[in-house]
Length: 604
Image 1 (cartoon, rainbow, N blue to C red):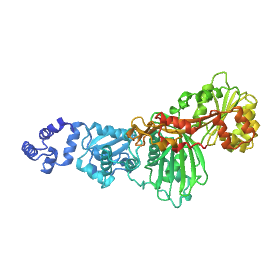
Image 2 (cartoon, rainbow, N blue to C red):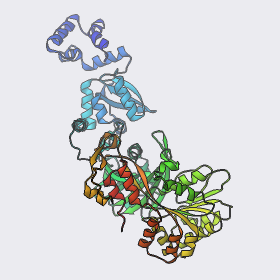
Image 3 (cartoon, rainbow, N blue to C red):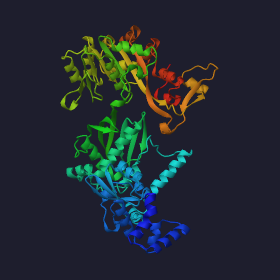
Image 4 (cartoon, rainbow, N blue to C red):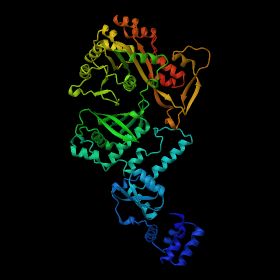
């Protein structure tokens, strides 16, 4: 309580006739000689009861008094406030009505405690006054005998880490202080979420109503919201939630690498799956077949699209969510990371009046971003552009985008065939997967259209081989394909902990560099709080841009093998992925370890 209130408490008790002046003087003398709080001394001496003190103080402050021994607090009210907040600020939630949370406090004038509860719960907080002894007894009753100990241990661990202690556990990817999963589960009353009755062995017998009820239960909603919010805060591109026999694993893919984070308890698996199905408008009763859906949410002030894939596995349903954050999308070609001279080749190819431009690489290598950037660069009122994608990842104003739906017959081939009847100038096909799609794309290129698409190949020359394996004739490939871009994403070295070192000659040789006798500096990230001790922050692309020349076309017509095609492309001036990556390493943009992880050495 405020200092002025403490100083006048004894005098006010005397004025109201609750204690005598003599009793006050005896209590003040004991406080002076032994220390302690005046109200506790008065209570210990038997001059006044604790409830009388609390009621009197509450009346003076205009704050209601709550006798905690006379009420039973509902579990959902207790779950609203984590034990760490309750113990640190000596408070306990008691009532919740119309989003107004009444909190009993030993010090109801502690505005910092009230603000913490408001921020944590999202409710309006109305303080009440109760004795410190009663509040602590309620902590033990409702939060358990070890209430608050987890918070103290985590704070000690954090202090040890900040003083240089070596971290061995999973890293936190937050840049702002938030709860972790342990605190969230504790705030819901029980770490094993025993209030959820999920039958693991008889899961198939759960009816639709039970699944829907579990998915809408408040603790599950809070857990799912927490997982999504923390993933967006960490800058993750994907969320993996995986059920195993005895645990429930949660991982975030950050800068292309999976990091395990604290997940919900195994007992919440069915409820989490149901919640995400409800959000994705999927069939919550179907747990034997894969399902795909989409969620649009607003997190941390940003609108986020989530592509949800749910697949049945041995011990439940694995859930993978791709995070599509349009605020992070950059459609400026110079920002794609092309090397000098290579960018000009690419820009020239995408401005050709007709032909086929292909972008290749594995899933998650940034192919869509490159294609979107190309479309954005040529998008103007004079150009009719249509795309068919699976699914549409980002909305591009001025471009007609179609979601492929194979289940109803809207395949890439069907969509592309339809586009050709709509007077297009430029069309984009999400991926060439089969001979039918390839032939329609080639016919479109032959009839005066510019066509963009993707293929899953390891390098640029491999795109030609892949189309040949689909059954496309070599003369059709050489007549239509103008440019093939292969790409990968490398993690950037964190600018805050970047440090240099002298390169080992063997490493330089493995990079394909010949020793010159001079020392060459390479760079790496030491690891800091800004990059979650990984040494990397953000990603960039490396590219392999192949422009088909006469020599390469001749080799294709002769059906040369993939290795020979790559050799001809390099002789024609193509810079490989590995060579592009080496340039990034020498510029200090990424590490040699990251290069070796992503880009394989060139043969020959």
